[in-house]
Image 1: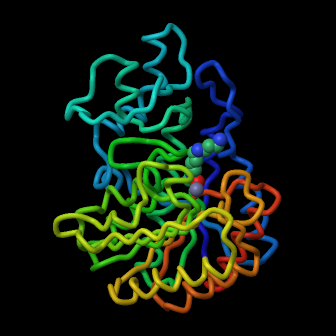
Image 2 (image 1 turned 135 degrees about the vertical axis):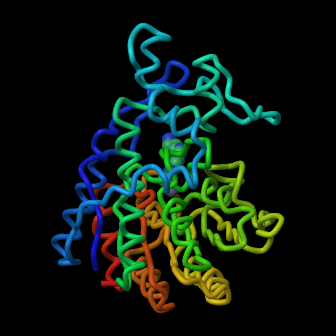
Length: 340
Ligand code: Q9C
Ligand code: ZN
């Protein structure tokens, strides 16, 4: 199978983030891409291509123009406000019950408006990295649209937490949502999100859209990030009611319960008869991940890949989380092997 990757991701890089005067390590690091590329190569999984440039239109089909401008300009803009350019962070959690329709003029308040997180910085190279990460997903979508059975987009930064107008959870542009919305022009599409965390951004983007089925297996949001979203009661709204399936799971589960729950999601996807399947591929479900608290074994990951591939639907897989650099590459290959 073909994979899509670019070295532009390395423009988004920081070792740490300062929150309330405390240093937090930032584990969404460029080395993640390097270990995955090395594993793809040693497994002989197929060629790695550079992304094509589909421009801003497919990004603006998902994301708010003011939000995109904020991602693009706020790092440089911080120099005007503070005298020196520095990572742009929200000073407190960005969720208020009455978020206004118009972003505030004040620089500090605007940074708060466009994120739901306070440890998710906009760095000097964040926009360029995020732009090309989205182009990787779009390129994979076009390859599959042109007849490939499957394609893997090595997206970094990841995307599934980003909403139409808020970044968070290491995510800036919602890569898989851009690819999915692009493909809706061909018919209904399904998104299967197997990252450890609920993909609140993807859910929100398609919550009212009956053409896109969103199914997610993830840690119970009462127990882990993103906390505010991911309950089974969230089923979509309006015309989209019934096209959002959340399957929250307890911490520390293993292969058996995970694979049984996956069957529920796959059955719903088959019922929906999608033209394309898009997989948000997070390897933070693997045992030993420093953030995720599931215990999925390499054999379990292989079984996950085999179950998804057995649906025999043209499939785009886009990288989301996965933070154990010692095992991330091999674990990606375990899932992808069934498509290769
Ligand atoms: N101290 C993805 O997996 N909270 N995002 C981390 C670590 C944010 C995860 C806390 C987790 C975001 C794409
Ligand atoms: Zn995750």
